[in-house]
Length: 266
Image (cartoon, rainbow, N blue to C red; front, side, top):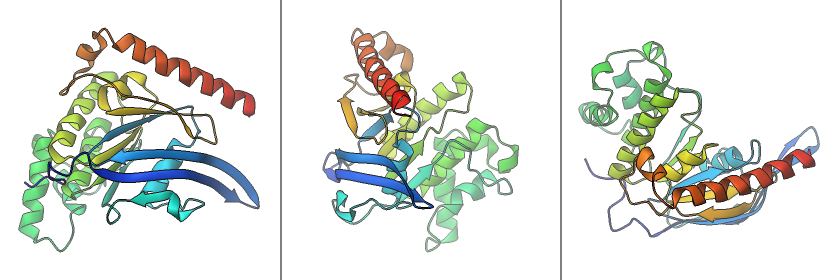
């Protein structure tokens, strides 16, 4: 199976967010969500977004996906053509009436011959540990398995930009840890650029190349932390690293400050 990115493309400029402003408008009321947010992103990079609840993290994902428009179109610059994008939400999104196989095939371009779609879907089903459940319907899956299906469907579609909005928040802790490892493995194999929204500092430090801490609403970039841990990573191993407590404390202190600012502002 060819990778989404060739290894030579990883690390090249992929996206420039330049002084991004965005507000929601309803009934003549304007609610700012993002303000003067700037960020440069490399191809194949794994970015985790952390910040106060309601600060604009999901708004940024919606803009990158094309679901919302920024105040200035030029504030979002893609290096090359806009990427094929997949978005995964907190709520499981497997179609309940479809089997796992058909759910994953659904994301693959219809121009791909049927037998090739089936083969590609099967490969991603196996990668996500769903082989024994191929013929189960979405309605028969646990929340964790349904999220595996959503990830497999996105990556089977040759997604270049994968946007995940707290995808593991609703599952139990052991399932969450396993899903984190599954995601890291398939990201390493397919090399999409990833934006991952989380409220978990440990999750952010485990998954990301860079943790972007966002300010209170309207959000901009407060600070960026680059976890120094070698890949592949496991949660217990990085938490035992001497650098982990300092990084976690730095993020928590900044997050607390912004949470307080947001509370006072409201």
